[in-house]
Structure formats: structure tokens, C-alpha cells
Amino acid sequence: MKTKRQTKILELIQKHDIETQEELSAYLTREGFQVTQATVSRDIRELKLTKIAMDNGRQRYAVLSDADTGMAEKLVRVLREGFVSMDYAGNILVIKTVSGMASAVGAAVDAIKLSEIIGSIAGDDTLMCVIRTEEDAVNIMNKLRKIVEK
Image (tube, rainbow, N blue to C red; front, side, top):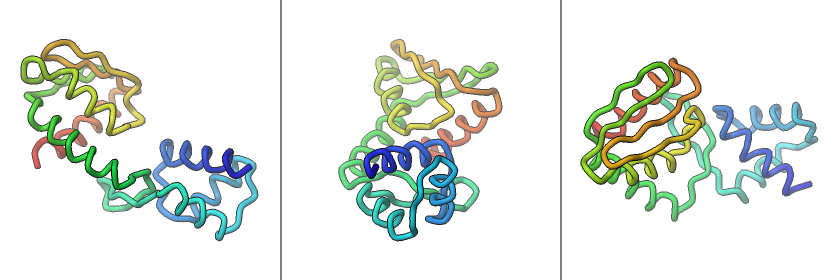
């Protein structure tokens, strides 16, 4: 039961911006799990969940271990160094990169694990990402722009 519950927690924090233990408990209850605050707190600790900032100033739970932190910094560096420009057409996001960097930039974008991105295909200097909706494409562009412009 614990494994199923923790798997569901990981799924829920990927799908929803969950800010508090109470919100997480409510989602778990809707999914058929009977949990206490102590159980949710223990699961958060065991899963090494942390809170990260969202664009709207609120926070949400995410999985971020110490090893992930170092890797995340490397991936952000790859994204910044390889990025040239981006644009979208409907729900397709096209990212232009330095020649030979599209695969590396694609790996960096994939590692960010944005649920709006269904998948991506990289060539030599172009990365194409299929986004769920046109509105999501605009939001993803804004998120990526914040990363590469820092």
C-alpha cells in the first residue's frame, strides 16, 4: 500500500501544483487512499520532496535530490549555451540552437519535465516540441525564456 501511495504522490505532484500537505491529502483521498497528516509528512520526507517556486509566486512540491541539483545546474547551462531562439506555431514549439546542440538542448528540456510537453524531436540545430495546447506553448516559451535569459 505504501508503494502504491507514494507512486500516486509522485504522479499527483507531476499533474498538479500542490502547495501544502493538506492539498496532497485531499488529492490522495479523492484517489481512494485513506491518509493522516503524519503519513503524508513521512511520505514527503521519504520521497525527498521539496518545494519549488512557481511563476505566480506560490510554491509546489517537486522531487529534487542533491544529485538532481547538480545535474539541473548542468542542464540549465547546456540550455543557455545552446539556445539561439524559439517560436511556436499552434501547439508546436521550435527551438533553434547552436549547430550540433539540438540533442543536448532537447535532453535539457526533457529533464525539466514540463507536463505540457508531450515529446520532442531534435535535429542538428533545431528542436521541435509537441505541446498539449497553443496556450501551453506560450506558457512553455515564457518559462524557457526565464531560464535562458538569467
